[in-house]
Length: 321
Image 1 (cartoon, one colour):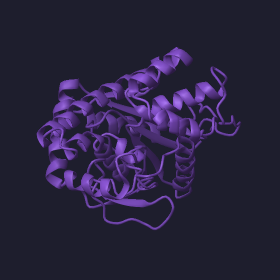
Image 2 (tube, one colour):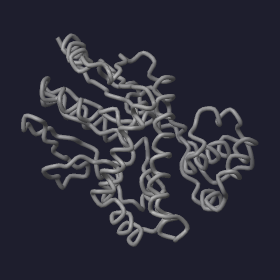
Image 3 (cartoon, rainbow, N blue to C red):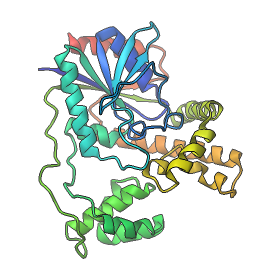
Image 4 (tube, rainbow, N blue to C red):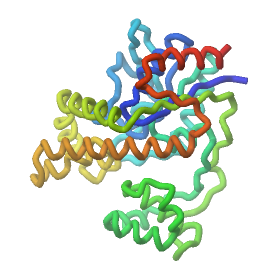
């Protein structure tokens, strides 16, 4: 049976650096599982790695340079414009294609990322609803506040509130769309399909989950935000807003939406940066909760332990033997 390794964990836990190291040691290639890094032109705010180049294929290859100068191919960056919505099923389908492609080269696929839901869908551990988009309903819901959306979902499908990110407006709209389509309320125009479920990945999977205390991760995340500001994040946001506007799906993501009030003159830059740090802390907490719930069977490693990298290497070596 073919083998693959999944590396999951919250923001600032060092997933990518670890994966590059493992790829160098065990002959692997990386498949990114990050819903924000899949957006083109959004480079600084999403924390994309500095790369040596990209291909012109529909699923770009970015080449990461490791500590030893080795070049590691990384797939599924830059799939969509900021004005486009990402689709978990399409993303997972492309990831599956890349997994098979990497296997065909007798290499090990390393799935790496903090978007837990996408990782679940790629591995076939979570089923999608099979509900197509209802654009007319979405247009109506876009005009509602998060509080109004929460109240609507609470009325339609209260159990769903326990399983989604209630601070994510898009997730709330999607949950309402699904509830409506399955008959919890007046029917919308979305249809229910049968083909949006991926079977469990045809291979043996080793999942490595990285973690640490919140305070430790917050400090690392804050340093990353400061580095992004130094690298020109504010200018990147300004350029993207000019091209796509604040309502573009990509501009509603973490690292970009926090600057809207600054550009509108309602808050200072310092306040916007602090908001980004607070929101990143909250995102880290949600990621940790998700991985604890849905990846309980993974091998867990505390990145604060001085020998955790050696322990990871030992586990992967044993698994691949």
